[in-house]
Image 1 (cartoon, one colour):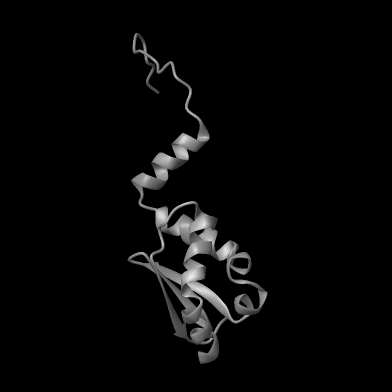
Image 2 (cartoon, helix red, strand yellow):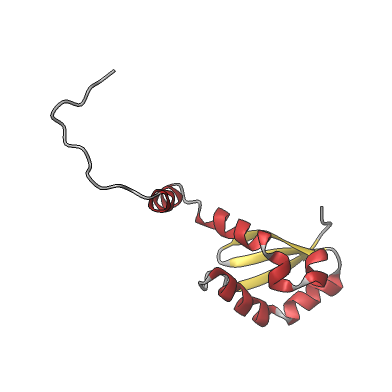
Length: 108
């Protein structure tokens, strides 16, 4: 055990929020937290019908990739892409997602 004799202590108290922000930045976890926020509010962003047939898969170079279970819903997402980008901007309070891409695949 090492005792800190005559070493100055830090006088300021750090908040959990500031520590969490520095840890997220240090380990480059920004996209992971952003993706989880989108995933948790997916039905609020796109609505109940589209959310039952789609799910966000990943964020790749400022593009949100969405998996859909039928090509009709892929077309629906592409037609409403501009309004979805506006809703994402409002939901995230930042313009981080710049494009949306849909992939037809089996949902879990």
